Length: 339
Length: 242
Image 1: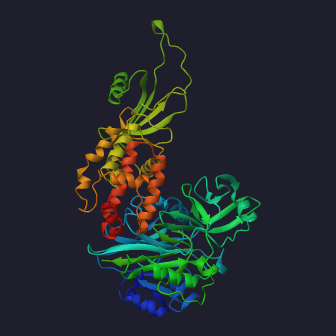
Image 2 (image 1 turned 90 degrees about the vertical axis):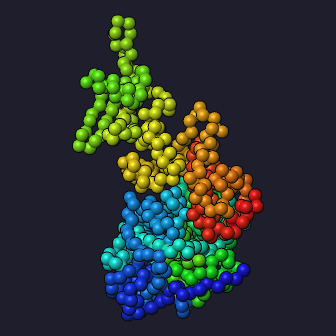
Image 3 (image 1 turned 135 degrees about the vertical axis):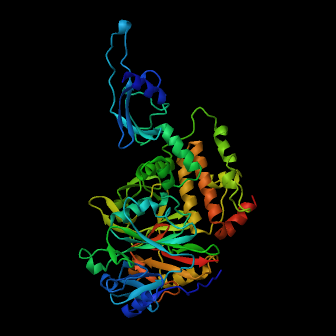
């Protein structure tokens, strides 16, 4: 079933002066961009994060000179922004409005990133209140020289260690709806289970047999650009591989694997852009309202070589991880306002 | 002082051979610490026999006594079974069993975590640890001597939740919820949040054997449907056919 997505609120790439004007107009915004550019922005109602990779209106782009700005739909009261540290993070959903949604920005590689990835599914009110967002990052050329940041535009605090959340209430006649577009599906390969949740694994069970996962990946010459995929009652949830250390017998991931689900390596996606367009055409018709937020994964950007290619409809930063309730990898997430 | 120990022992409902060995009041913090151990066995003519070897001291937060935060320190003989003692708890848990039951009852009433913190004065971190243990099936709340049928009864006695339900959502007592959460009934689910929640709940149900904790999970699922009814038209239309 085809269901066109409206773009009344969807963002776009813009220069510093346009972004500055928008902020000064007094609305609420979600902004992604390079740190230096974000530091030029005025104080205002915006939640930001660092990243130089985007899917803009003209296609995939890596830039330190433009920002991606999307307007946050505000109609049911004043949004509230607050930082969450390792202690308070578990309250992120409990603090959310009874009717509304929350946008979260988490700096990559921080302790809160790790904590959220591992524990979010158990947080109070998780899945009951819409939580969407992204993991901020840096240009790959800046690894070791810069830190991913979350930025509170109201105070101009640039934060590497805490997550920032904008809690947005909605009026009673509207509600927020979060969904994902994941082009990866489980392949027809082996069933893989892990003994514990974590970002790193050594041992696993392949089709029920004990094995070392690093040796399994290497000896089977598995394309590690393909994520592991688990079927969550019909939602395909990816975990992307970060590194395989055969010497230590350890595989690192960009999101944790969990011990209570079965994984398989994804089937290849030969043409990301065509597959994405197909996915848009066949998506569930339950959402038809304007897009309030969307983002996609930098690994899709890199592995599918999206720079310069136009992927229609859902634009946004290409991030170090996506949040649709819990942390996801290699997945497009988006929020619409319905009602 | 000896009388105070006896009185404290009665307030805590200690039975022989357990006894209050020491206690300390901290008026500034309104905190009471009580050290409990087994009375030294006495032979004929009051001669004290050799004390059995004791394990490490364990500490649990217990139910407040007249507004005083009560912390129980227990040094029990090695291998002693503390599972039936309300003032003791599992080794890896921060609460006594009596306090755990109190907190669990508040969960069942739908009180949010920060509300429970305010009511009980329990730090959020400790409450979180307790909730995590429930979710993992590592903590049981049902009275082991109480039959299962009796432990299901509170569901039927929960009109306050059912009364809030939109008309087209089956009541919490409807068996459809148990079928759904146990995987005997499969829906075609469109809502991402329900897919994720259902996977988590079913996974938890596989390891949770305690009836009361399982019922808590049913309430969680029902509460999700009540709260998100507007976007669950597709799923609710299937539920109504059962």
